[in-house]
Image (tube, helix red, strand yellow):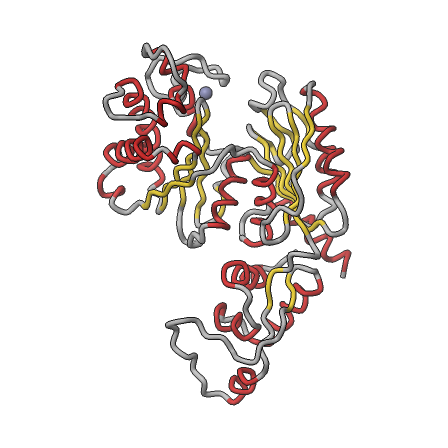
Length: 400
Ligand SMILES: [Zn+2]
């Protein structure tokens, strides 16, 4: 189990590496001797590696030379610099995604690059999905596996280790994850999360969000709206492991009945079906978004409704950053209209302080994205669930 101090070092290497031990000390304020022993244990674990020594100590551009009074510091600075970096060879992360009718597994190195193409298996009977996922995991897991991220849509109860309800098998009821857990928990880090939180983990690690920022991610596609809230870089845990259910917050508008059983859900509003109800005879929501101009009344109305849902969430959460995640963000007219509509429906005092970003990212439910969950458990505090933390500690003490 990585103590928070080592996590700080890893975070530095993730964001700015390669860095020497001395530079790690300067960046984190951790005592040089402690940096020495912590990096030694990270080297032992195969998480970081030493690069070729360089003779000149590196200073960052524009940064004033560090205070150079002590002789010890001078001595250390005069030594050849041995940069450290995240080791991409010895250990890996496995991402496992459970999707409607399919399970997929991906192997990533510790810098988040795919080691090989993801493998997937079709599942015809919902009853066999967990067994299939377990078998795939069993085939890939090894002593080199450091972290496992398992992502699934729907609601997960981490205490009973079961999926309560999911669009992957509507109407099928509660499914136990125990067979997967049995295999996965032999790895030092194992995180089970909703796929929106996996997407949020990927965003967090690739966008250098400040650990003090609160972030609202909203993912959308035709008939799908998901969201995740990061509170100071940690997922908002809530009472159940799920996405932040923006897609099932409702507006008093006539839509088709949602699979949750209600009418007016935001993800039913943001759909081709809703456009049909407004008399649009042809074209999907994606096609109309691609061709969007503000004289398209039906589309403008759909955008306005969807933006109202997002604006309500922004007012409620007051995030530092709102990230709109979708392949549809590639359509400039549509995206501009959506962003403008969110801005105009949010309280001005809040909106003036929210940074809106677009992230053109396809389907959330991939094994590669699930792998980023595993990486988040390694590099970021607050991602490993409580029971996962106990297991990691038990494994670490057994190894020592
Ligand atoms: Zn619903």
